[in-house]
Image (cartoon, rainbow over all chains, first blue to last red; front, side):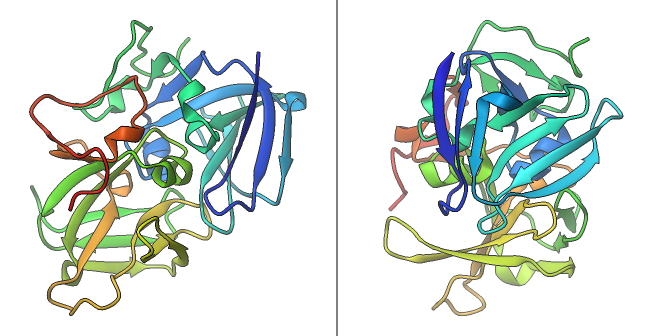
Amino acid sequence: MAKITGGCLCGTVRYTAEADPTSATVCHCRDCQKFTGSAFAALVLVPKEALAIEGRLKTFSSIGGSGNAILRHFCPGCGSSIAEEPGTRPGMVILNVGTFDDPAIAKPAREIFRDDALPWVHVDADIPRFAKRPA
Amino acid sequence: VKLPLSGGCLCGALRYEISEAPLLTYTCHCVDCQHLTGSAFSLAITVPDCAFRLTKGEPRVVQRTANSGRIVERWVCPGCGSWLSGGPQPGATSDEMIRRVRAGTLDDASWLRPTAHFWTRRKQPWVVLPDGDQIFETQPG
């Protein structure tokens, strides 16, 4: 476990977490592409009790690929994509690693929704790749 | 590529159309782009501003002073936080104005292929850039 600090682009939202950043998930699903505006989301799972957030987040709720609700939290001031709460993982929060103060501490350990990946995107690691979500 | 291109935010409150093919497709690995996307880089297409039309919704306009000292405008969905595009640049005349649209918000981004990569000095080590592309360690001149 490592102590992770991070926050949004405008500085309104700050957080600290205890989590393993070397087990990150790269998610290529279309919803993650739209939410980030980028090619994929890079995510680290944190138990809810190991996460402390300062500042107000805004939340958008939708139905994820599993058919369960997923809450997506972002900064209402600058729109930074900060965290998700998937209905499939009660008690867990997913942090978007680009909002870490030092995103370089994150290392991908799996790619999911590879079926939706943009064809030129290449993650340099010998890690499991899943066409959709892992079973 | 089939025109117009269409896209929008995750919740569907903002929708846009683009009537011309992109001038450039690029990734930007700067720290601001990592923070705002929450991802490893941002992915953008540039289009003439006059070819971009917001067809639904009102974006939140977020202003920020970039490292260069310029004021950068970003259009963000107030409902779901998706970052849709930049704003029109101040000072440019309407026919030379370029808009940067966040390509992940296109309804179909699968055909896009970036050819340039900015701020690779800040790139995450596990992101591999395609061979032969234009690499800029910081901002292109």
